[in-house]
Amino acid sequence: MVFIFRKGNDMRFSYTFKEREDLDIAILGFPFDSTESYRFGSRFGPNAIRKASLNLDSYLVDLDIDPFESLVISDIGDVNVIHGNVSKSLDALEEKLTKFIRNGRLTCILGGEHTVSYISRLYDSKIIQLDAHADLEDRELCHSSFMRHLSEEVGGEEIIQVGVRCLDKEELEYAKKQDIKQIMAKDILERGIGFAVDSLNLSDGEKIYLSIDLDVLDSSCSPGVGNPEPFGLTNKDLYLLLREICGKTKVLGFDICELAPPYDLSEITAITAARIAFHVFGWHALKR
Ligand SMILES: [Mn+2]
Image (cartoon, rainbow, N blue to C red; front, side, top):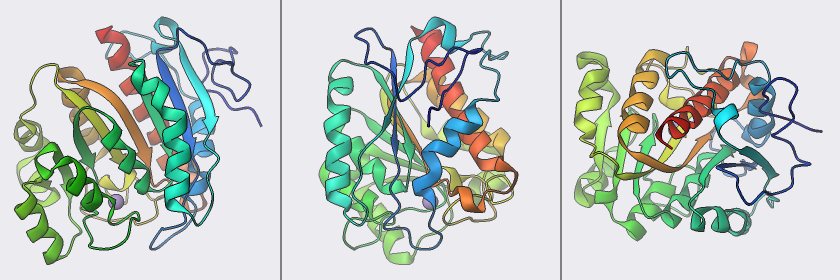
């Protein structure tokens, strides 16, 4: 099956793609969902996002740019994951990713479950996680614990979590102890997204890895995820957050994860996911 993030009929994002030396953005799918705690199906996420991308205009009117015209954006295809084996699957991803990171390409990973963001440790950057969940559980590496493992490796002060509304008390205490900045959904609901934008306190040009769990959005905006949660961010909130993060910092890599197409009525979540990717690409194109 050939999928494309298209520009007209140009199939520039396809499995048949030959890796070009001059590519600007590399897209990889990570179709892995073995450690999901509630609803499985995110292994079908990458292809659902690719499919949704086919019907989106790639000219971004707010940025006045078409990233597909000014950049070489290429879909490298899916990583050969081994279902049931987290570490081997992440190793396979790392093997594919390394050269793009080394060459300074923007990498975009389509999940798959959120455990994929464990690879953010490979980037020399701060990590911003947009998520309803803190993913700081004290257990083996899985989609609800990977941030704890990451924090032990890179240090909590390198991590900012935005939109958090589901965690237990132990995770909350752990975050405080590790100095992980958490911008809670309840504060965004009360004070508006401007509060989150200000609290991020980003510096111009600082390097960022951006991890986007689609459940950061309110379940009404993103029904097709593994663990949907109400009382979350709106699409507008997410737009403004992306504008702040991508406009101000240098995003080195990002992922969009936890899309579970079997639960995604009207493809609402998949279309949002593809649109998010287009926007990050657009900001990347603008800043080149
Ligand atoms: Mn989550």
